[in-house]
Image (cartoon, rainbow, N blue to C red; front, side):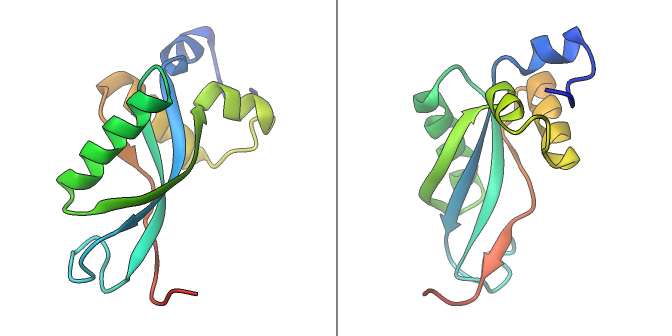
Length: 116
């Protein structure tokens, strides 16, 4: 957990979950920018996987999109411990922002133009 800089941040992050989410929607949606779908990391201030799914679905629906699949989700502190803090700084900053604002946050949407 080397990214966690102090006890205050660790305490803030205790209720933040991170997940990789596959989304779809109308390719004309500004977020998809012509793509059929996209993958993005999502952070939400929740206590369990069920709450993560609910918060993520609401946030995705608010963008006019839908969830195709939640590939994985786990508490951010568990993820940091699993990968020894080897995590993108933006994801970490999104998690801190989520902890402080209680808003569901998205990382960059990585779109794709064709399905396999």
